[in-house]
Image (tube, rainbow, N blue to C red):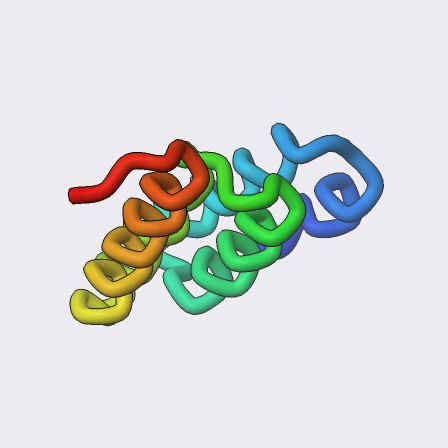
Length: 86
């Protein structure tokens, strides 16, 4: 099932958690993908690739607005960190 790799992901690196999120998406377990994607973004401190993966999970789960808002906020936060303004 979708959660088969959870024990491995809980004790391994972020790469294992990324694989778990992708596996959940591939198996159409979108709620699980969103759950683990959220944890991944938290642990990776919002890396671009992980935020995109989470937003894909949001999109596939039908949460289109949430995906867009999350991407927009991430972009704004990145601009603030780099000192750029739009």
